Image 1: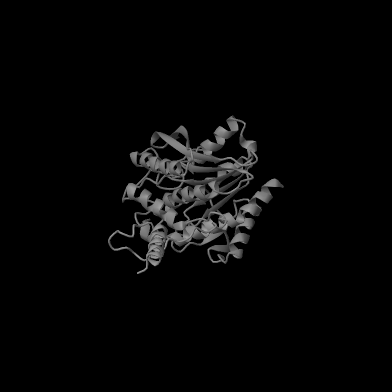
Image 2 (image 1 turned 90 degrees about the vertical axis):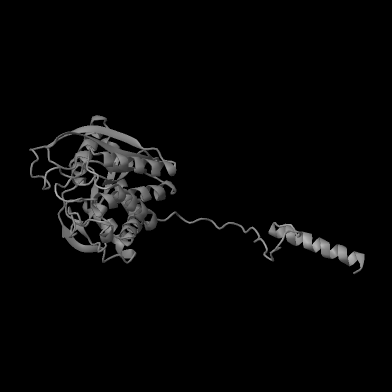
Length: 323
């Protein structure tokens, strides 16, 4: 081979080696070229990922029953706080002692604030405790688990988006009654339920901070595999309309049904304080408050539907809050 030609071949081999990051003298020299760096595409908005939410749900169900005041709910708080810390978010603990039919119980609301261009707040809430059952093991995959998991994923999405309003995500403690029924052993003015939401509103009133809360969205029992949400007549009508309108636009009309129901839930304390509020809940769940509220009766698809619709409804919700 002529010397000049040999030099050209050697140069070509060295150039190829540089492209693939391997020495031409290395054994098994591969014939693979490194991809050229492309101009990165402009990222779109971060979207709700139900697979992430469902993984959080599985982890919390694995903890077991998580009644208010129990070691398991403390473990659940640690899990939620750790997952939010991985997102770069700081959790504020709102501790209080609730007087319940079983005595004084320490409870903790968890609060994450995402500052916006304005100080006015829009709250996204749900409870993370499970009902204490005297018979059977209640792990609350849907009732307690779905809302707590949903809010972790919602925090990830909202953190990445520009915000006009300041958003607060709140994991409420003590939604569940300690007695068997919803309020069978409550006292006048002190029901045996919704301890966390009532305390949050009370604390905001004492701090003269109610006026900055412009609206509240509550999610509860949104993981049912056969999810069907009805319009709650106790909720603020225009907020319900905005969410159901978004659902129709995304072809989720079967999930967000055009029928009504009347729900008593954590939103009542906010409504009583004059705060527009809406509750998304499916109480037509055969496994409600039974040991069969397990992972095999919930679905990531249901969490995805609620996440997609709520994010799509946000512009209309915020427009309504400005009126």
